[in-house]
Image (cartoon, rainbow, N blue to C red; front, side, top):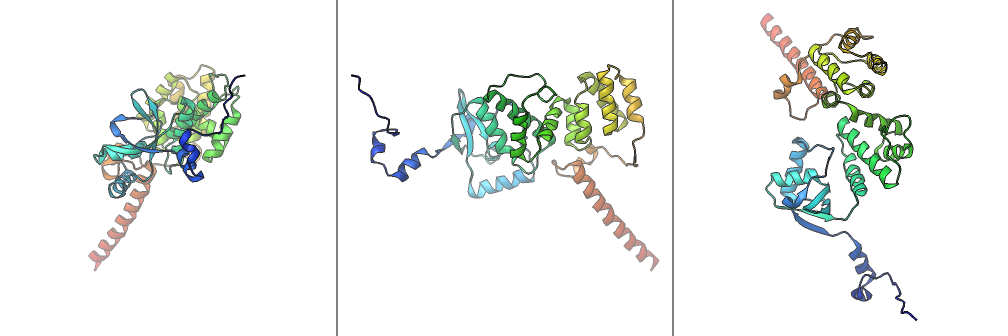
Length: 312
């Protein structure tokens, strides 16, 4: 008769003599001081590490109190791959610190992607492009994890991962349809996607433009930059229709985009590049606009005071 071992759920002989509190403590994740040189950014990390006011505040906090929340990483061949904590690592490096506290945990590729996205989606300020690629990465990881077959057009009419989009939306505060709309943005060329981030092109027309072929998007971008114009939702839908019919060329784009938009207003346009020296690097076009309007109000008030003084 073979000797049968009884599994008591213990990890070793010493655990027999542990208290319940000590056993629980052994199960808690351990924080290690890892060399920054051994930490690798997550592959295709969609979130940007910006040198902005928030980063300056983070540096100040770490300088005064150290890293209060450990980063999360998984072991890889040449060190550790960061799951969360990219901004903390950048701040530590800028301060000249050699190590930072990290929780090391073994994870599959799918688990790592999902954890990386979830840990960053809670940030207050996210660009549309960051959301777009994060949602796409998480949806693909979720589909691989449950063994769904791959589908070339993951947000098209034949895509079956509706439940994945619903779960992502519930966790991030968006609807399933909004999740899929954001994912469509990953089909834009980088130049147009940057215009979406800069709020020069709104989300709805951008989604329509994402269905255009790459050469069509490139042609559209050249015209938008040359004439300083952007398409309305209606114009973007017409371009999508013409693209489907293989009739969208430079002449068609110029004709469409030059047509007056409904309720079109006059604008004074100044390229962002000319204004950057007056604003923080991370300032959005909307923030620039609000500041400029306040500055003009201030200028008008002081001009009025100066005129009254001249009259006296």
